[in-house]
Amino acid sequence: MTTVIKAPGEAAAERAGAGRPDGGAKRGSDGMVLNVFSHGFLALWAVLIVLPLIWLALGSFKTDAQIGGSALSWPANWHLDAFGRAWDKGIGDYFAHTLIVMVFSVPLTMLLGSMAAYVLARYPFAGNRFIYYFFVSGAMFPVFLALVPLFFMVKRFDMLNTYQGLILVYVAYSMPFTVFFMHSFFRTLPAAVHEAAVIDGASHTRIFFQVMVPMAKPGLISVGIFNILGQWNQYILPSVLMQPQTGADPERYLLTQGLIQLQQQQGYATDLPVLFAGVTIAMIPMLVVYLSFQRQIQAGLTSATLK
Amino acid sequence: MSHVAQGRGRGGFIAGFLFAPLALYLTFVIWPYVQTFGYSFTNWSGQSPTFDFVGLDNYAALMKDEVFRGALWHNLLLLVFVPTVTILLALFFAFMVNAGGRGGAGGVQGVRGSAFYKIVYFFPQVLSLAILAVLFGAVYRSDGGGLLNGILTRAGLVDPQKPVEWLNEPKFVLWCLLLVVVWHGVGFYLVLFSAAMQSIPKDIYEAALLDGAGRAQTFFKVTLPLLWDSVQTSAVYLGIAAMDMFVLVSTMTSGQFGGGPDHHSEVMATVLMRNFLYFGKSGYACAMGVVMLALTMILSLVTLRATRRERIEF
Image (cartoon, rainbow over all chains, first blue to last red; front, side):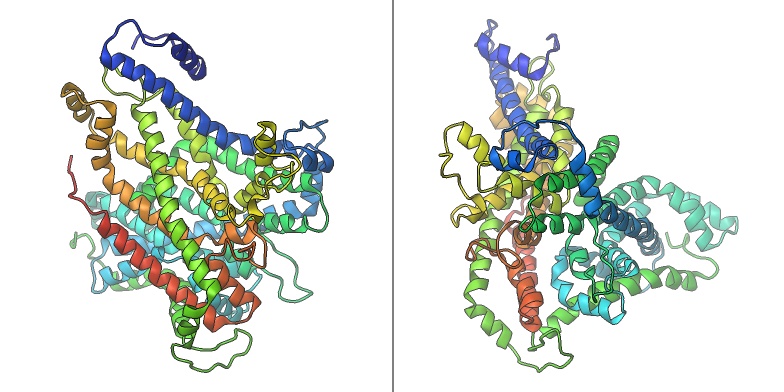
């Protein structure tokens, strides 16, 4: 591979113009054609991913008339008004509500999930396999099949439209995957360290928190990312469980719910820049987190699926 | 391992660690699923605490429900097309990224910038469906302000006086939704297949090259068989996603809980939610839930069986 490094598009274009290379070796020309071809398709799909996102973000700087007029108009100015209005319209609150829920639900999911997974992975007892499959089978079913009774279950606990209600439900629905993933992780940890701790006279609980959990950190990170993304993006559960129950009940919409709410309000009062700005605001943290942790996120999500 | 797990207070420890997770899981996950099953044999309205046992009436009514049957048909269409299109595109791109580079003395290699492509392609996966709904609602807008109409108008393919009402056109609406799912999913499965491709030892490719195999041959005879497990898993996951579709349909299409125009984008989940929250027919909605659950399980089993092959160890 002695080729000079060039931008993908440039190199592809040049190669397309050059036609068949002089070498004449079958493999070489085959590779060249394929290279142009593959870069072309890869670049096309990349544009299809990026273009709508950028277009939407640009929309936050346009006026309503511009947005309605032509999709390909360019913002006349770069005022941030729409972002401010979106924040005032509730995006700020929705953000806060989502954070309040996640600050509790994610650590609790990780704690309870790894506790159960640890016991099931490392302590043989009668019924162990049964409980394990019982937990894991929950991952197979779509959430909304349980939605009707779940609504009334949460209602019976008087926890509709409360943070604690939603937190508990999030934790419960994250159990199957967390247990499944951490179970396989705890099984791979060496037994020797555990034995040494037992000989030193450490209690089971102490061994778990001070020996096993630190050793399981890579697994915890993977499944943690999985849970953070899953719970951050959850829409069905909050849209059913977080509706104000009485007139006096304050609105505690989460971000996903709030965006849909904002979209549906567009039917009455057209302020599309606000909607676009709201979506842009909601996308920015995901973009930042994604770009900072993209390797772990990709590895975590895909390994979680394949396990 | 048993000797590890001996020691003082073992039983109490196990019970203590399992209690809270199990209690939560039973209360909020398992019990509601069981109840869905039970309520499906009643005429429960959801509002009143009383209800009568009606046997299989709900299921009989379901069979005759035109809206539900239409929804079932749409789910089946999606079930065929979502996994097929997504997996084919993802495999194609994964092969391009990993083996589309210029061959030579070094054998098969990925294209330059493959890391960049993976980062871009995967990004939609971290966006919530709610964001996708707003984004594509704007892309598919029914006037010149929609991105798709805007581009097609500029290209001269659409008459600016008569822009296409993508989400209001019975012929298009379901396919527009399908494209959103594909847009969202391809990057994820690309990364998944890439990881699997990279775990295939390089010497297998080199041996294939030495034997004079072309790229297409290498792909079909070497890569694909070795990826089969991942393809199978992906088909099941995408199939489950195709049975769901609730968020996109209910937020992007017209009507109470979506499904419009005139039920042309209806899926089972939207019919279920409408019956539950809007018509107050909770028992009936539960029967739909049971049917969906059964279909999902059958689907998973069939996919796993139909695509079963000899597993290749390497």
